[in-house]
Image (cartoon, rainbow, N blue to C red; front, side, top):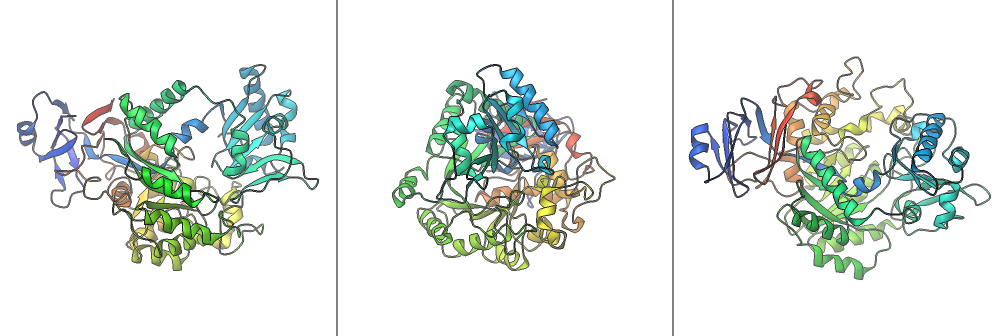
Length: 533
């Protein structure tokens, strides 16, 4: 974990020394930032010397919201991300049925709601091409699943269910399941019937995902779903030398969890390894705009969006207070503006995390002025995913988000610039597997608010675009502040972590449309080169 990088154009994001040509890392910590000669003199015996040959070195890029482990678990079977009609879905399902053969489950992921513009999702649309095989098809946002009739039968799903959280087995007027399952508790009914991969296969898949993220320039990520068992798996990955991404690991707090369970989580607060740490509690206050499960101040165009994820919102506030009282950083999924208010209200009565990290709100896809003003004044960090605007830059193409929100309220959508310029922390990420984890894509979307490379498209709410520097900060300094790590991460400075990303061009200086194609030359985590071109 000893490394010297020379011959670089270093953008440090450190106001004390904004630029340099070299960096020396000892035992995973930056020791010297300065000239090539200074860094070479500070090199530990046997340290690797990496000649950047004029390339741009920036603080290690960190995705502030992604699912490297659960996302990998969900990414089994056929990729349905390109499917935009029922006919295309049927063809893809039939092809996957042929591939898996007799007795196999047909699995898919990445399905978009736009595919069902002409008919609502149902088993009847796919049963005949499956020939009796079970199928579980996950929507791109992980908030819905479509199951075949055989799959529902194997899972024992034969009618409506009651859940402790806002979830639904969608049924027809006769009480028969249609095949659509909304939100986590309902989806899990079918997930539990799907044969899981072997433990070793699962670890290998995790390691491959992390390596792919390194190849895109990522040095770290804030994982957003977890439990004590997953903490054990991540510790196992590190013991094998395969934890190549620095990760923050949360514990998922759900409606219906007893006080004893929440108090039991306290034993895991300070668990950590060299490259991973716990101490985060993750909540959901709502679902997503597209399926009508986001919690809104005003209903969407179909009259949906008035139900919170926690049927008793007061129990959400109590759970936040309890976890904050145990010293956890609290992080809440809030897509709708009413959910944002609920999170702010809960945080206002809760204590600070033991680590000093601010409580956070994720997504904020719709946001009113009233709640915007509270973010900075109450010290709550925002975490957003600019690439979730995909489709909003093509107003002539049907889009489930745009349609549900309605044209009159589009101005409340994805207010990145307003949040940052109000003085609040704004960390950026992808929510992978929802969108590409490539930070070059994420930074380009934050700057353009349209698909990179599609210069003829109109930006969605162009006035909310971030500057090139703000976009880079979203993946570096702002991500560090959102994690309470601003004193050790997010800059290239002595005493900071030896996490670095080497790019062929400076991401602040390159044209945003060209940014996704800028080569990643090396990725350094903890002083170790985990990827090199």
